[in-house]
Length: 175
Image (cartoon, rainbow, N blue to C red; front, side, top):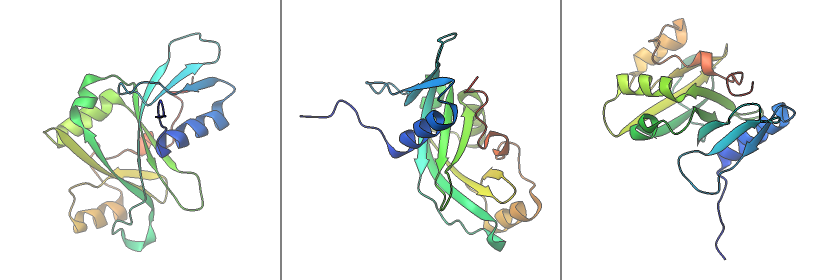
């Protein structure tokens, strides 16, 4: 007998985190068919519609970050048409970390499309998201090593590559 559906590791981690931390306010649903929405979040009282979530997860990558400032980092491939179609409200990027909860970068789909489309034209885009000490989150894809060293040292990076304001921020999903 074939399984009706499977849950990917990243989807499980997001659903489990939401249930443990916000289970008194919302329910997490897993669609039976894959139509571009990995999870659906609804208020317990059904006072408003649900929030569609797309989840991308990555194993940790070491990236060559100087001075031991790297907490964790992940590598992601995004189909630009998936963003353009706008079936989901948010994308959540899960970055695994040793000895702690994963990091979650929670980005509205329209904002992610704007950022990705401005940096990369084409069918696929790639993100190298890193979390640094001080709760900073950046996309380092395409930067040379000297540029990465400069970003890590002084924290100056293009606003299109700065994902800090989306790091572990659940308030737009959980209301």
